[in-house]
Image 1 (cartoon, rainbow, N blue to C red):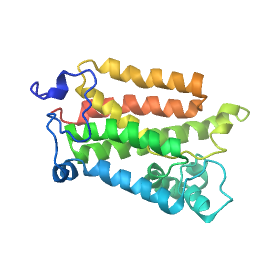
Image 2: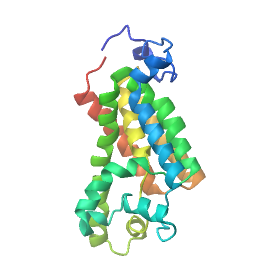
Image 3: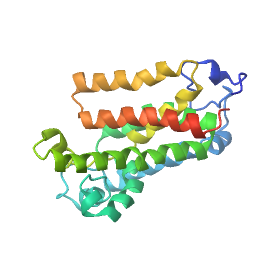
Image 4: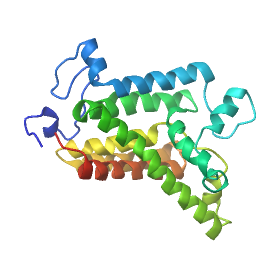
Amino acid sequence: MNKNNPQNGKIFPFVWPWKDANNNTLSFKEFVKKKPFTIIYLITIWSIIGVLGYASTRNCDGSWQLTLQCEYAFWVRNLTEAPLVFFRNLFTTPFLHNGLDHILFVSVLGYLIFVQSHEAAFGSKATALIFFSSYFTVAPFFGVFYNVGIVMFPDSEFIQFAFVRNWLGGSIGMFQVYGALATKSRKPWVMLLGPVIFEVFNLTVLGIDLHISLMHVMASYLGYAISKKFVKQI
């Protein structure tokens, strides 16, 4: 690890969107060149909202826009009922969002803070790979977990709930990138404690589903492990 890199001395190695890893201000051309993944993803998800509107986690019988997005969202049941669709939707579900709060959370907190900071430090290729890999690690893990669980515990309301709605959005990917960015922190454990505290708040105050919190925390820690093992530390 290069000790001269300003990010390496921080507990939270974030940079402003208009800065590079050395805290230099980027011109517009440099910004586009250094952070294309952030730009392309944000343009894509907001364009989808502009064309199709918001997706729905349960209401799939309304407009054709809702039906289409439901078809390409992540459904736990597809693992056994339609494996090819399950696999296909691992590529599409990161781009679908079900409300303004959902897409703003991913865009502002996830991308304009976490993801672009990682992209500045590690480059676009590593950032994209870590982001999308979460949909081929965390998502299938819980797909198997719930499908096995419904066989073993068919009366469990917790397990049943995983099947009555779809799961979508870029939050799993952004949390995995956040965990990967923790490898540059002076005290990684402080950063890795963040998602746990955040999800406790989500559960106790906002009433978010436990299923989502488990995915977010797992993605964070897996991102750290993947980056520590496979990504060159700059």
